[in-house]
Amino acid sequence: MSLWYGDIKNLSNEKVAMLFLNKYAIGKIDQGVIQTAVEKAYQLVLSQLYNMPDRMHVEDRENTLLLMPCFSEKFFATKLVSVFPEARQHGQPAVNGVMVLSDNVSGQPLAIMDGAAITAQRTGAVGGLGVKLLTADSIQTAGIMGAGVQGLSQARYLLFNRNIKTLYIYDLSNKAAMGMINTLKKEFADLEYVAAKTPGQLVSNSKVIIAATTSKTPLFESSPDNILGKTFISIGSFRPDMQEFPHIVIESADDIFVDTMFAAKESGDIANPLKDNVIQKGEIKEFAGLLGKNEIFENRTIFFKSVGMALFDLTVASAVYQLAMEKKLGQKLDF
Image (cartoon, rainbow, N blue to C red):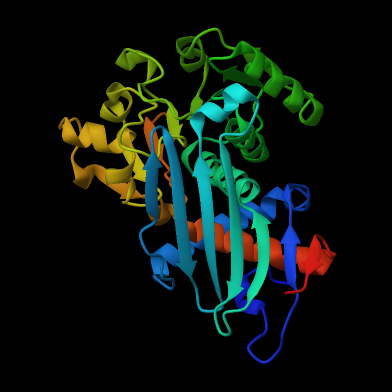
């Protein structure tokens, strides 16, 4: 069975029960299925066979509400997601949300899903695909900054794509870093794990560095010598007042990629270097252009910024829905 949304039959003449998928059901979907769905999203970017309005941002103090719709020929999806950075201080996840997948012929809702779980999986897969296409197969060291839900997902997809020998984890809370290490040890026992004392220690010892934080100031300072020949992936900064990496990273980069050009105005990791004339907009490339090219990035300095897009949610939710129906996952709800 092809895990692609074009294979669902026309539902306009029949009433179907809506499927409810919680984080446990979504967690049963293979990582390869999720990453393939993200790659399909990039293929749609190239073909332009989708309709994705700009997402709506509503800000309340430090908190953000995002409304993210997207349409394809067969489906449309809408994700409502909240980002409350301070929630972690109260033992709660920073990201929560709801995803609704509907038939784009009849308008019938097909599934309602845990939006935070979809976000964690698809964003992890975006980072994982970045690792797959932007790093050498031979890399043995990596670092994750941020030990929250997204940091854990980034680590899982990193290890899905590369045989890392030593993984460095940094978080402002050493307890959180150790908790993430203990979780990963149960799944990936044959690694050396290091709870980095500083971001600088992590950067110095890692060949690929992935940041999954909501930091408003760069996480570290560095000289160019400590940057060159490495791959930097910024996942967390999604507002202009957020910036995970210092200017020296993007200034030193041989190649700069974004998942969507919307990142140039949405994320401080791109918007601030542009404003300060550290880089020019013409230097920024869309990640989708890498598909099928087999470019080699060994010994190059790479910067990849992902702010995410609703198209990722649509393709991942579609693949998850189809596999869930096949494997009888989740719970059916009658309206």
